[in-house]
Structure formats: C-alpha cells, structure tokens
Amino acid sequence: MVGGWEWDETLFAGSAAYYRRGRLPYAPGLADALAGALRLDGRGRLLDVGCGPGTLALALAHLFDEVVGVDPDGGMIAEAGRVAAEEALAGKARWVRARAEELPAGPALGTFSVAVFGQSFHWMDQDRVATAVRSMLRSGGALVHVSDLKGEVRDVAGLPHPAVPRAAIDELVRRYLGPQRRAGQGVLPHGTPGGEAAVFARAGFAGPRRLVVPGGQPLERDCDDVVAGVFSMSASAPHLFGAERDGFEADLRALLRQASAVGRFSERQPGTEAHLWWRDPAQPSPAG
Image (cartoon, rainbow, N blue to C red; front, side, top):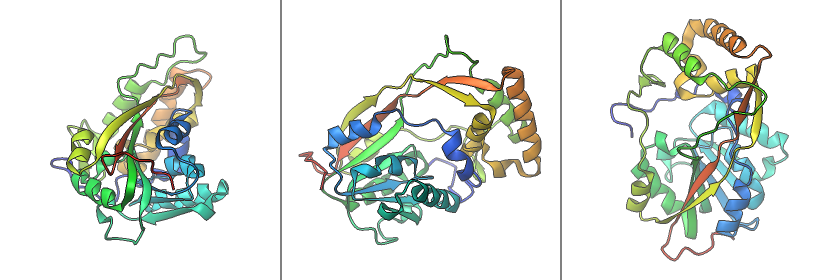
C-alpha cells in the first residue's frame, strides 16, 4: 500500500456516473492485440480486478465465456451492471462488490484463464493481491496489467479546437482542495506507487511481454465531457468538495468557456500499453 495512506470506501465516491463519459477510452485495437497475444477464442473466464464501471471487462467480454468484475465501490458496480444490460451483456457478466484484498477468500469466484488490472493495481496491497490473483488463475493462465502509454506526448497542433486547459484545472482543484493530492479521506503527497514488475515477479509470475497499442486519433470533447473527466478522478471526486461542489463546478465551467469560446476541445487518443505475465513459466495459451 501507499506509505502513510490507508484505503477507504470514499476513494471514488460519486465518481461512477461520470467515469464512462469523462475518461478517455483505451486505444482501439487493444482487444484484438490481447486476443492475438493470448490466443483468446471466446472461451474461458476473465477476472477484472478493480473493474470500476466495467470499461475494460465489457470491452473484452466477446473474447470469453464469462467476465467477472470486482470493485469495492457500490456506485461503480451498479454502473457496470447498468451498462452491461444496456449492451446486452448481462448474461455473461457478473459484478461483485469486494476489495481485491478479500480475494480469494471472499466470494467464491472460481478459477480464471485471464485476470486484468486496468489502471487499478496502484490502489491495492500489491503483494497480497498479486499472490491471491495468481492462485485464482488456472494452469497456463495470464495476468494483464493495462495502462495509458507512459511518456507519450499528445500534441493537438493542427486540430480544430484548443487543448483542454489541464494546468488551469489542476490549479482550480488545488484552490478548493488544498495543495496536496486528495484520495478518499487522506492525501497522497507523493502519488501512488509503481514498480509493478517487481511485485508480479515476487508473486511467481513469468514475464513480462509488453504490448503497445498506438493511439493518436483526434478526439473532440465538449465542456460536459471535461467536467465529467474531472469528477471521475479520485483527486477531485465530487464528495471532496462538500458544500462547495456547485461553486467549484461553476468556476470550472467558467474556466472552460474562457479557454474555448465554442465550448469544444481537441484531444488525441492515448496509446495503451499492456504487460502480460503468465502464471507458469512455459507461457501456454490461456484460452479455454
């Protein structure tokens, strides 16, 4: 866990309704890249740990017989169920409200051919969770750690609208919430940990194999999209503003109108990187 910080259930309180609209999607082609690398064929079971509103699990659902998402936030679990029903995937998706640290002794979930972490592992007791997830993978199974491509520069030069004024938004958040990054009831002055590779190796996984799925596609965002993006983040989750939430949103919208007279912004699709780790050194196919 993060030194000096303890998880609490308010970490993403109120963010679920904003998440799917506000967060930029994973790069197109991620599902195809994983299907090729892991030889996925529509069989097997997927475990999404820290699934949020089901973004990654539902994008990969066609590659498995069943997907199971685990998340401690009730709002996220409810949103995942709503979207699964909307996309006619409710019959092959199961959503479980639980902390990753409860695995595998919590709900009886069975074994899986693939487990994924979509930008969630940094919130967990990493050694404990990695060991638990490895015990839930069948022989030949794989763990996939998915994140935005690190160090990528996404210049909007040549696109029709200005960039999202992120530095000004960050300053506005600090004006309301203080100089240290907020996270639930605590603060993260030094951010969240990295070093996932060492954790997975200690847990006995073999690997990794790195996949890069390029982004760069132009995206257009309106003010509602940007506001949703801000409220989707743990550091600016709606509950953190308390009675000043409406005032913050009014100031945020005024800032956005000042940055773009037409209320439109250009962005580029982030690239996505996935690190593949195998339960066993031989790295057989996890399909089936």
